[in-house]
Length: 590
Image (cartoon, rainbow, N blue to C red):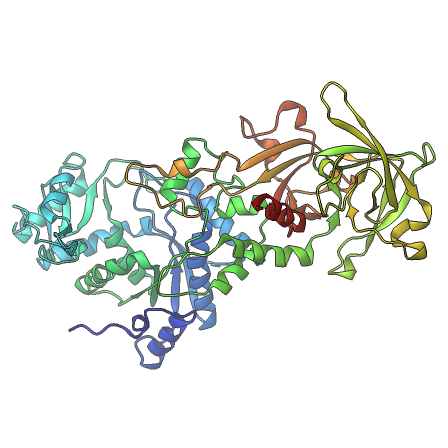
């Protein structure tokens, strides 16, 4: 009976089981160095699930004084593109990893892989098959469940061409390479075991004929190696000691080892770990591609997408993402991580480094009736209470301000401590004001302005006679407020586990119809007009926001209208803890 490797014996796994396994390999002399690789396929943009693998590959190499390659496993020309390569490299660098001069492409190994396939044919371990793709699948068989729901895999059937002589196989394979046969007419298959309970070992395809132009090799090849064949042999060529893969490749490991053994190459070792699963998120590139192609999102970098580019545009930081990956750890069993923990890691970073400013998303005019007409006063505001070195800024105060619509109620509910007739609040960094009345549009019943008086003695936090108010609200001066467009993002999917769909369903059924709200009439402090792309701020009481570096270049329904293109665009990254929302939620529940 085969003994399981040490790292598999604890089914619960642990955050450091891979490093312990590597230590054991170095200790027993299996390897004398550590060399890993991050092997993305250039058929899409990197998402946060890739971050787990990327961080593991690079940090394990760093931990043991080794190296990590960046290798593009580009053996499927139909779906791959140079633009994906460039996007992947950009995102890796943004996250803070560097592969130096170790950039490789599986397509550079086509000659090497072809020669190894010939070697395996000469050993009698591979053959050219004339079965079609559908027939191969039929001959290999499928797993079935009996009446007790016990899954079994009945033996497959040998292909009629399985026992072709070696010389005939060599000749046919060379003619496949020369382009003598039509696409799909023949394949090269490994001769392993058609009775194996592991369907992947039932004579897997090594090469198929496909006349697609490759983005790097052009039309110089018309046969392309399958992933399960090229991946272990590419690892071996690069001297990769530890091929770290997500858990779905565990069933592929016997095949990985078979190709290395039969090709007689460097004995790279595969170790699996649990992939990242995140609530309210899908991390299948096939599904993400569909969202892009069918225009459910504006592109791969849409801030609702879990791609690194989307997260970056949303306002996520490399520090927050790497902290999240580090804290969830690396385990051997699958689990679901609450996206709230990712948001927690983000807040922890943004809270330390983001300057505070004031902005009003849904403006309502506040008129101070006892303010001297035309008077503008400068007040002092703290840029970040978590970091004194960020200093203070001057903000203008005048007799007409913008406040949030929901900071005033004509008839307030219980425990409402904001503005309502007769109530007093403090304006952040400014004065205590008392509501004296309001203006209402008689036709619509909409509140158009709130009126108040201010107490001159309460400037900047002063409270004579121990005067106290329960509410503090933010504002911007109407005299110099900067018009903004603000985009409020929610989860792209409304369902916590959107990948779980009924047999007749579609993952698109789980899309959140309210994942994006565009607010075109917001106002902010004047400093926001000069913000650069990717500058991050805490809009006080509202959350964290980032200046969108892409929005002004967008076209189509997802982009701003012609009248809004001059406005700075800010994306909401993540909210603050909202005590009032919790109170409202409790009242609604009652």
